[in-house]
Image 1 (cartoon, one colour):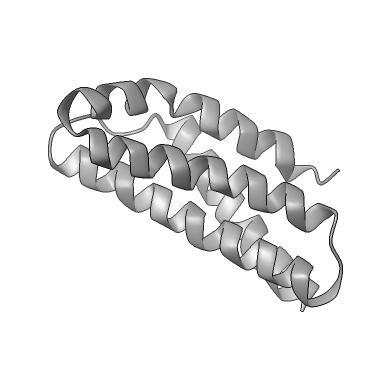
Image 2 (cartoon, helix red, strand yellow):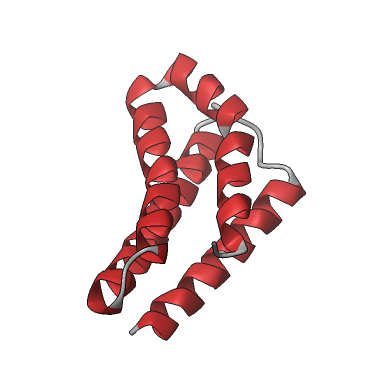
Length: 108
């Protein structure tokens, strides 16, 4: 298992309060965030069990979903649905993105 995997799972758990708050104001945005954030975990897991081009594609999809999730949280914050993420969660996001970028390059 990749060391980043439990970090990603923890990040999804960290998003739960934000998801609930966003859902009270904008169910569609909350659903999009829920789907994209869980997709990061699922694509990372799929990539861990794949080889070659499939592995690369899984990590690239995970990275795109991660960026989508971050954008959803940013939009929700700008609209006043949620406060800014705690520094620890924001740092975790940066670590995840950095790792996914490296994995996408290594796998190709």
